[in-house]
Image (cartoon, rainbow, N blue to C red; front, side, top):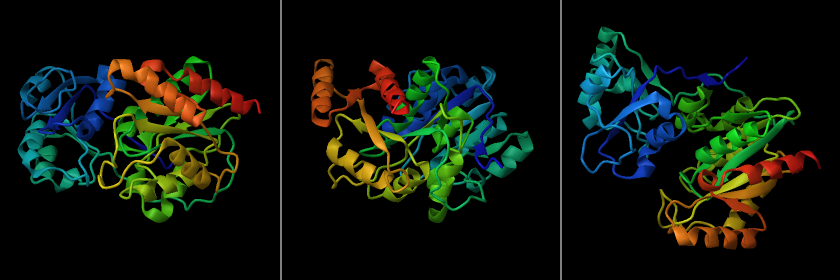
Length: 343
């Protein structure tokens, strides 16, 4: 029985960004624009200084006239709540014939008047961040196939982007691979998955096992990571996902210019070597052979002339391949994974 949550959205999408002015808070919209731009018709910003994803600004009326079929809430605020100031806009979109899609914890059914508006106009309210009601407890039993999990020094450091880029690189190399989504944006892109941070704690490792079932010997599941063992807010989710994923390999993801934990700025980020060491210690509970094959670095915040020296220095410190997947590609990671299969 497939217990992943299937997400079938009507495209094209109008991405709602509200008044958020930082890219981290708009990561859902940014992910859709990056990985399925053909499905995005435009963006809706409520303030001139709201984050700009580089697509056409539109009103609800303009988007509907352009053929938009869904309003996707493209922001992911701490706590996952729907801002009550968005109520009128969301209701207008539903009244205009657009499905409403949300990856936030607050249910769309709790937005004042929205159920009635959606019912009247015949549109759908789609809460992506809803875990299956029935999930198994993790067993730790060895599964066939291969798994590589993205882990990180913090939240929002490129785990999803790295997983998507690595999946594509594996496929380009003729290797069977599947992106396994564990968060709302990844699920919107992949069309299925389980929102790990909405799973009851006893069932997180079981959910991770469900996401990545046994598979062919040469197949790689590329599993989207969540949170970080070094983030006090979300470490519990990260640990359960790590144990249940039972990875043969991990890729550590990091933002080159971040110094403190995003949700707890009084905490400094760990060194990359400390991050590798702790993740491997924990991963080896369910897979004693787990290894780290490289470091994925978001270098977008570095000056151009600092990027290569930074990566070279990090590679010397760790003894591993260190790349920015969106600049350098993931071919080096693919080579490392193939070497594992030959051991």
